[in-house]
Amino acid sequence: MIKPFEKPIYVTRPFLPPLEEFCQGLSEIWETRWLTNNGPILQRFTQELCNFFKTDNVCLFNNGTLALQIALQGMGISGEVITTPFTFVATTHTLFWNKIRPVFVDIEPDYYTLDPEKVEAAITPWTTAILAVHVYGHPCKLNALADIARRHNLRLIYDAAHAFGVKVDNTSIAHFGDLSMFSFHATKLFHTLEGGMLIFQEAGLKGIFDYLKNFGFKNEVEVVMPGTNAKMNEMQALMGIQVLKYLEEIIHKRARITDVYRDRLKEVPGIRLVPSLSPDISFNHAYMPIEVDEQEFGMSRDALYERLKQWNVYSRRYFYPLVCDYPCYRSISVNDPLTVARRVADSILTLPIYDSLELSEVETICEIIMFLQKGKDGLSRSTNAVKKRVRIK
Ligand SMILES: Cc1ncc(COP(=O)(O)O)c(C=O)c1O
Image (tube, rainbow, N blue to C red):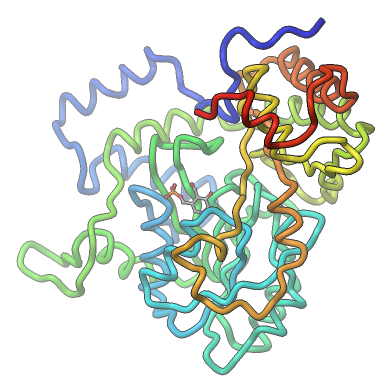
């Protein structure tokens, strides 16, 4: 008999460095009393990231959303931008805040990234850029998108919020396209509590981004553009330096968790896993998505999501609903039927994955899913029946 977990298993749990290490780092901040505004720890962290990514074109921010918002502003993107509706809502918000019209097109069914054919079909005289997302850390169709961008003279921007640590052909994912934004939010496998980073090709953008994140200040008396406040502080940078030391270990543990999930779930009727990634991709195992086929599994995705809570397992319907279906974006006309994105948004579920999740816990989560699939709990399969039974938090 499988028992529910005693403590809740959430979809993610942030990695924290040993407390003594963090306290040691804090003592430097207490000595200098330099808390923000390009302090010594931020400078050190920036240098470490420059070394890690083998480029000087790195700029740090207090979160990923403002990083991307500033990127679009600093690059002068305007008019229409072709993007995906299958993403976290912040991707689209950054367009909105820059008065850019999002043009939503469909995703491809394997890895859920922007479908290049649909991108090309959506280009108009007002299109200035493509904003693609490496969803769950899966690299987009890099060559196809680069080819479209080149032929149509468009900027190619990647929301790489999920993709820290991913490499393609031994090259960091950060080096594809004109610019990539990474989120260092606490829920990400690499984090700085909150934080964000831009990596870009054009060295000249660095100065602009630095102005824009610090009110436009050039010096004490000159403000050269109407910037905002999006600076990373010393505590964030300290967390970044310390978490970076453990990155390999974190990814390794996540890889083992992914292996167990994939092995146990691969033959469960009605559960679809993403196809294995091509061997030239070095992956970060940021998320563990599954698709639930209601007919075959015998239970809808929503019912499974609710039922898992009864076992103290908190998965996420990530991303559901599609961004274009949120009330604030519903008035934007969408020409693409978004067939794949709609199907995926209705069937996707991301399962718990984090470095401290025990492999035995992963085994149990899989056993619960198999148990539910076989209908051994004897409960009704319908979502409404489940919702009535489970108090929604
Ligand atoms: C795809 C995507 N884009 C943008 C963001 C925004 O990043 P942040 O939370 O650092 O502002 C997130 C995440 O949190 C995300 O998942």
